[in-house]
Length: 358
Image (cartoon, rainbow, N blue to C red):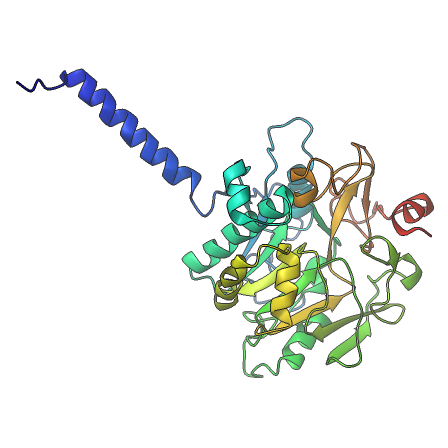
């Protein structure tokens, strides 16, 4: 004769089963977000819905800004998200942090990228791309959690400023567009805002213009290793195509996010390399050079999403001093300074020798 299980045992089994299902769903959610609180709102009067075209709104003219991060902010040695939040509040930007949990060994093997760090980067960027598609976001910016930018970023990316105007011109966007709502036009797939540097090639359509926030050419670097040849001294430029790597910051549309996700099968190369490949193929891409966003390094420290996951393979030993190449007035370093007391976090001669070999 069949004897049923005691009621309390059945109930315990149900609870365990439900917990396991809930845990599985939670671990596989395509996003876990945290909205940055604005406790230092220097320009809050403009607001998210500002129609003022001389300064960008709190999301730099797009609907949302997502930041991919695998850092545990509760770790006392963590610095990337702390500096990110401070920089966001210094410049009054509204960011959402997309937490990328550490991958298990089987997940790394399944992604089959070049390394654990590369797999982690693929997973993190894919999460943000999925969120853009899931929420049907028209245009969003995706950043990495160690990025830095100039304290004047909202002026540099204002709808009426040269960068946005150049993107609309190059992409032949409809002149009837409301530039406050569509500062970069509506005819692009990827706008690469932060990268490791590159060249403005005459063979590709480009527009250059004077920009007082650009460092002298002698102080710029590509890959933090060699002299920059991005534009004439004191000039910035916007060009079609890409030809750059390092996915520090980029804008995408909902449709281009879907196209990038389709390329996730090509994990044998890093995410940024594959995005550049896509820009050389079916995606309409724009690049600003010199870049507007760059990785901040703690001199001697591991900075990047890839570097940390690879346990320093692409970085150095732990250090203290922050350095940001190619950015005149670092938002991270000026988080505690007002506009009358601005400092710089540019590399010194010893840093150029260390990273650039010059």
